[in-house]
Length: 183
Image (cartoon, rainbow, N blue to C red; front, top):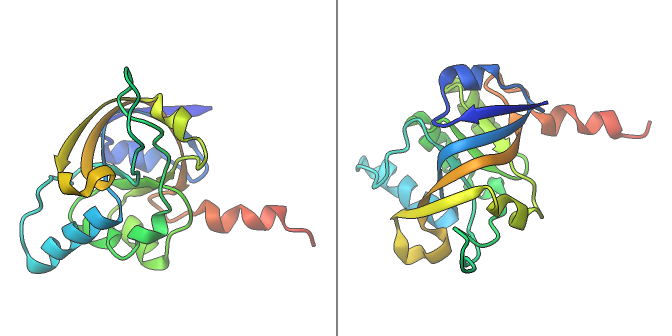
């Protein structure tokens, strides 16, 4: 059974999510990839104000393809999350509630998720066209010069994802593979 969540995500929503849960998100999320994360991180290191308020947000690691007429975005599949691992703990410590990407995260990110009672969701790689259908509109928030890597706001409806790491640190990348290993 899928859990439906209306965004912005609440602490109670996050507390009720368990690793392995299927989730459909509806509401507003922000986007960002490597280059945007690097810029945000550099501002944090300098103690400067960020150009986007990340408190209470979910960030989707995506660089969408150009939209076809009549569509909000082109194919919009998740980017490999490990590329943001250096930056994610600082963003979580500033109030980011969670991330959406693909693939495992390092120990520092998992620790930051637990410390901040956040969540890590994964979207299905290879399903970029399907995911794009759940994105109803987009708006560039900052770093327009980065092209597809600009920070955007998406309005989504029934955006499909899975809880990979819950607020207690339960992690499908650790718990699931052993179930399928041959002895």
